[in-house]
Length: 251
Image 1: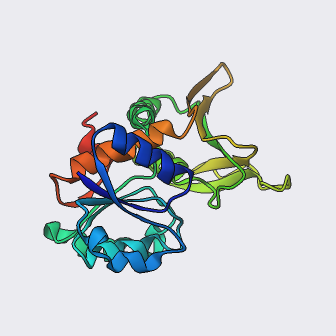
Image 2: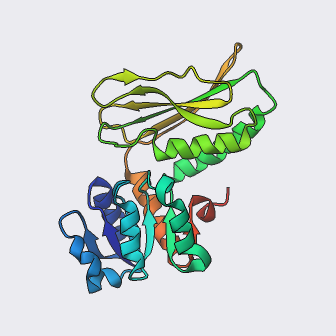
């Protein structure tokens, strides 16, 4: 495949390494200093563009790629609140193609399936309260993480006693703390911790007077995310429309 990279930070470099190892060609690399390359023949020649940037520019990057009918795989989070309907319209009937996921890790995909199943089980055991905590490196801009929000929405969809998620306790990158996990009975608290260079830890806890059940995904590095993004690009080459992890992995 011919792959373009949009965003050439740590994730971009790791994606490049894995894509090359899997026999793909990187035809174009776009970062903040060469935005004009969106109009280059090299970018237009790409089968798929893999985009890891930030919430403020992700949607505009999709539009720039779609202008040249380049399919996009994106792990950028935070744009859906303002642009979800627009992206759904653009990708309807396969006109354009976006494979979006809050997390591309194969392990997180498995963890997500376990999360959904556990939430369904817990409908029968109302004595268990549920909370979530996510920990990431100090450079991460959004809190809660996109992955935490996805996991929380899966719990809400499968656990009748929870109607919405809310921000819980927050330990910020500068060391300040705010918020609380003491929330209404129908709310799911997400605590967010920002410290050091943690790639990503997500824990979901069901606690009762008698005992506690915790499931955790702890990423050792960004490599799992990068591999998942390249696998998604390979999947996207032969599929169209608005795609996500559940299309690629049928758990």
